Amino acid sequence: MTFLMPLAAIILGLAGLVWSADRFVAGAAGLARHFGMAPLLIGMLVVGFGTSAPELLVSAMASWEGNPGIALGNAYGSNIANIALILGLTALISPIAVHSAVLRRELPVLLAVTVLAVLLLVDLELTRTDALILLVVFAALVTWSVLQARGGGQDSFADQMETEGAAHALAPRAAALWTFVGLALLIATSRLLVWAAVDLARLFGVSDIVIGLTVVAVGTSLPELASTLVAMRRKEHDIALGNIIGSNLFNTLAVVGLAAAIGPIDVPPEVLRRDIPVMAGLTLALVAACIGFRGPGRVNRLEGAVLLAIFLAYVTYLVATATG
Image (cartoon, rainbow, N blue to C red):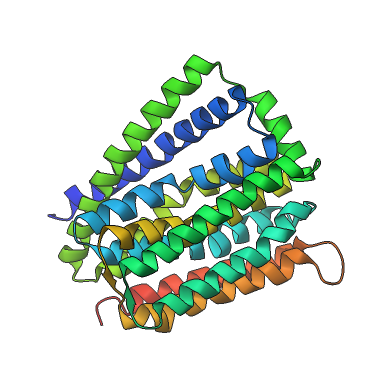
């Protein structure tokens, strides 16, 4: 029964992460609108990246406390879950059509960033130099997004964000309060989740990386799942896809970059052999489906079912080989 306390802590931590991330994103988006940020930029940065705040804080906390396996597994596992689980489940419920030219331009960027991640991992080490490269690329991407939002005209993604913002507007004082409360709770629940995940891994004799890739990664991806399902229910397809693209870019660059900047990470060989090919293959499949070489990009129900099957097979393999 010794596993009951860390298990309860994980459930409490994940529930706290989901609620606090939602409040933090709502507050930050409200402040951004109050200060005149363009709807397109709110969608690309505040919402897309804001839903990855749990991954950022959990990975930073894990790296700080000497558990790099959880830091890496959380980031890359979340990318896998975002595409295979969240997008697969969403497309199975309702096919996702891609209308936004902005998102179609971001998809090759996501693929290029994934290739960069592979190249940095080849030597099975993430140094502070590697961290600097990731964070500089992230800063350049943010700058590009700002310029794109300011210089471009209206886009279907921007239109959907503007409608969404008007429907859920917050007063400046309320937005500031929820931003602060959400961030404070994110930090507290991230600390709780890391402690519980490490304890659970030790009790069951599995590696940090497996716990990070499964329990922690799926848990920290719950804000993306919630926001994506809500967007699809409202027929806001571009917001649904934008959540996934923004989150995966943030995870690959900022989350891993910050974790490696806190402390160099020795990469387990199985990450390069097993997890990175799955992440890269899913990213390539997402780009091919959504760019739409033979017509408008879309993820249909059959493709959604295939993505879900891949996720279930991957997790089953991880669990089956966890202690072997």
